[in-house]
Image (cartoon, helix red, strand yellow):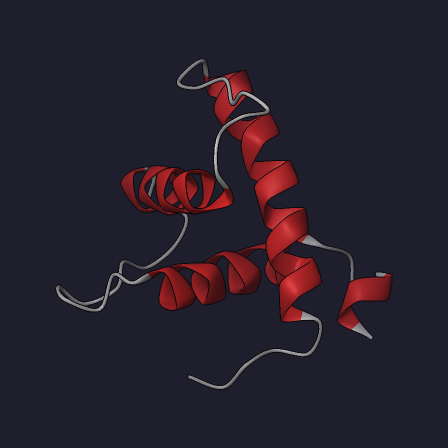
Length: 86
């Protein structure tokens, strides 16, 4: 798994956009006290359930791999000229 340029910032953006997506779907409302690990895991599973991202292989569902999947997902949602993609 090759790390993306600006992957940390992409994951933060994915969490922000994912929270809005989950709220609009009416399936979750995140609190300020929720850990980033919990948010990452929930958003990963939600996006897999909705078939917006490809699931990881069984046994590979660890936080770094989930973060990478979220970063890939958001990088495809952002416009090509977005600052995080440069």
